[in-house]
Amino acid sequence: MLQPTCSGVGGDPSRRIRFEVRARNLYFDLKPYLDRYRRAPHALPPLTDPDLVAKKLAQIETWIAELRTLARLDSLGEDVKEERFVEHTLQIAPRDMNAGLP
Image (cartoon, rainbow, N blue to C red; front, top):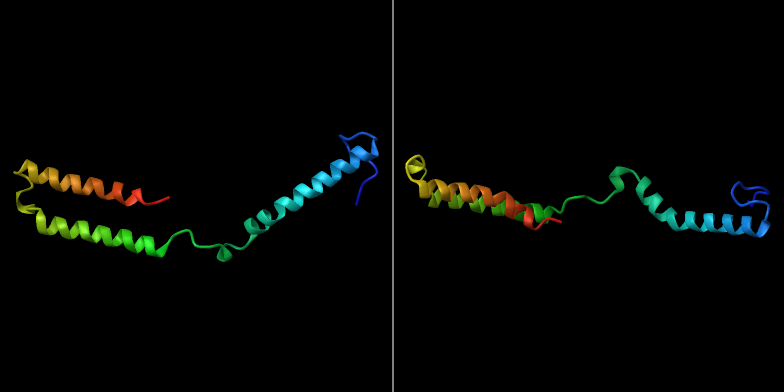
């Protein structure tokens, strides 16, 4: 495995051996990560948490239900307070949805 000549380490055998041993050790340190990276995509763990998605969807349903019951949609064009309430609720929903994400 040890080659008689190796560019960059000169003709010193002990220096060459140190270089090759270090290179081999670095490879074996990295090998588990390379193996995990090279696995088939179907073998990788899922990127989303189904429970977290369900929780976020439930929160969206709650906001929509609140808008349907609390907002007076017929007066949106006339009542500034009502417009601001609906706008604010629609603006904070995406912000709050992202708050719990990594």
